[in-house]
Image (cartoon, rainbow, N blue to C red; front, top):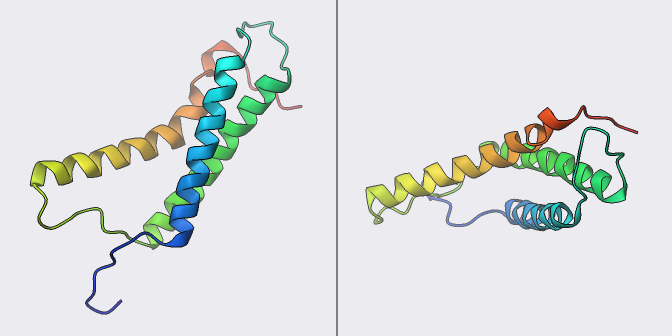
Amino acid sequence: MTGLTKQAYSPVAKSMHWLIVVLVTAQYATALIMPEIERDTQPDTVINLHFSLGVLIVAVMAVRLVHRLSHPVPLEVADSPALERLLAKTTHRLIYLLLLLAPPWVGRPLRPIVCR
C-alpha cells in the first residue's frame, strides 16, 4: 500500500483468530471434564484430545505469528492516549506468549509426554 495505512485485519488473520478462539474454548472444555492426572494415570480419549488440542493451538499460533509478522496491522490509533496504546500492545504480546509458550509446559512436571 503506497502511503496509505492499513485499516483492518486480513481475512486470513480474522480466520486464524476465530480458529484460535474455538480451539482454546474446546481446550478449556476438555480441561473441565478431564480426570485428575497422577503419575500413573493412563491417557484416555479426553486426555489425548486435550493434548492434541494443545499441540494444534501451538501450531496455529506459530502460523499466525508468521502471518502477523509478514502482514503488519494497525494496532495503534493515532488519537488514542499513549497509555492505552502501550496497554494494547503489551496485552497483545502477552497473549501471543501465553498461547505459544504455556501449552507445552503447563503439565510437564507431572508426567513425561507419551505419544501413542
